[in-house]
Image 1 (tube, rainbow, N blue to C red):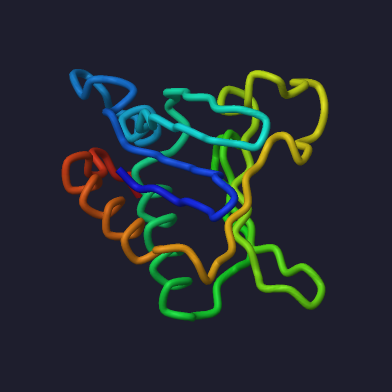
Image 2 (cartoon, rainbow, N blue to C red):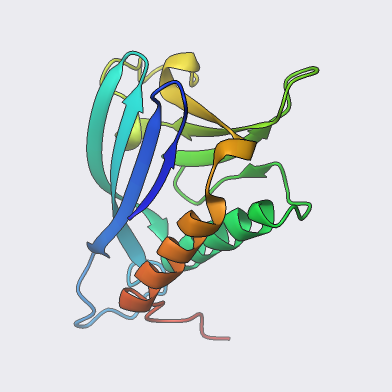
Amino acid sequence: MAALTSGDGSVFEFDIVGYEFPLSGMLDQFDSNWLRLQIRVVHPRGEWEVTDPCLLTWEVKELADWFAALAHGKLVDPSLEFTEPNVSFWIIQPPSRQPKLRVCFAIECAPPWADPDSAPSKDSWVEFPLSALELEVASESLHQALERYPQRIRAVA
């Protein structure tokens, strides 16, 4: 399980709990590679948990690599979004303050109090000071999870 925590009590925990579909008879590169993520969030307004097939195997690898690059001070794209917009990651640079990692939640992964018809608001994300995060640990955790749930079918050229 990967976890991000903040001094203000915010938490974002996530773990791969399986593939969305069994491989039997599966030939589609997308359907065979959707991963069910179990997400737990502690937000100033409350807590919620959800399990949803919101990332593909290669998207989890991209997230793990992005975390590792951030941990080593490498330049990365300041946003990381995926096929399903349920969870996304943003580097926020407030004026004259340290950068933060913002984790945004939408659709099936949104908090129970979020308005499904409006754009994500402050109630739909948590932020973490980048300097306080153990991104290398989160990256390693995701890479280890991918050993249990590797990419099953690749694109056919």
